[in-house]
Length: 348
Image (cartoon, rainbow, N blue to C red; front, side, top):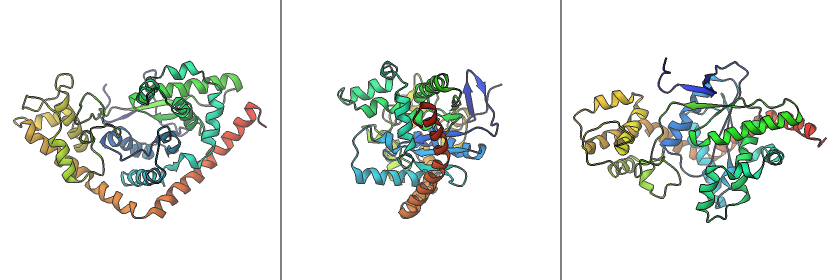
């Protein structure tokens, strides 16, 4: 029987894993700009659900990963606070999960070095993300950019995480973490759980300007990305400029009509309706009118979140306290694990 729309599945070789009470979730997000609808429906919405379903959940703002491209320090620090405010406004609850800043738990970087010494360069060189990002930096990508998948593995394994919510573009990175865990266990004894992927059935949100590409913070076409904090005027403008085609009716056919299909996907996501229900409701509408309907649905969905983000951004000390408290709790989990790793590899 098909799974209900939006259900979260823990996938490993095609099986569905139930919450056993012993599971631990880990996921991270980079503080590299405004979060957009793709982040919300692809990750944050699932994070909110997972914190209700699992007893041990850790979410990290992975600022070490963000340094793989140049950052202006003052802007970077503000991005960390803005990301914290956005996550809280979207429903991440520090009473139900650990929300913390990666760099405030130094064991992440230390374990990253140990795991890097167990990982071959050819394995990392084979990653499509490395090839693309290195090319975008004129083939002068940094060591940090090259090795960040190993640090990602350390993020996961440091807490003996059992499940990791990932997008399709991160599956290879989780496979690396799984391989590293198995390599470590073979060398030093059975220590790390081999983490499994948690995938969502939510359809991927695409760029409004290039519906063949996913919505991205780094999209040079600013009209292609719908940020959670966009004003109603900005949202209306971006939908008005959204790429569609010369057929006026609203249908769902991602292969032949990617632009209109992306609008339908967004409409379904913000209303909670199915694709079929959305298309049925829009019979007789032309795409120009439909753009306005989707824009209004997005405005209504995110207005309360946008207002809460603004409120939280005015209380910098609260945001810093949330991250500090989360880091202290994360250290309590990480420290005994890392001390045992030090013993296993021979440091003590």
